[in-house]
Amino acid sequence: MANNYMLVSSYHGSDEYVNRSADVLKTVELDKNYYGIRMMSNGKSLAIEWYPNHSESYAESAAENFVLGVKDYEGYDSSESYVVM
Image (tube, rainbow, N blue to C red; front, side, top):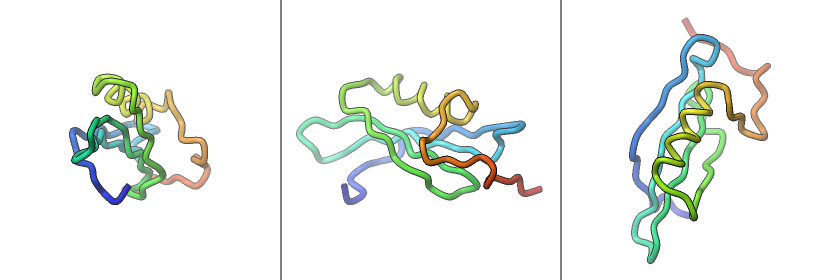
């Protein structure tokens, strides 16, 4: 998908997960649009997960779970993360 999506909202971690952030995204210009999240660590994009059969609130929950440390990205290596003061 060539950036045919828009930013809906953003979430930011705190404490031990301060390096994490997630954006809730929505596809545009499709016959049926859907939501997803972009997971980031230290401002670097890790991945985008799309949820074509779920609601905006589902994507918001996934984003919140990522920044709270409840959800991890499969390729995420927390040993490589660091906090910039």
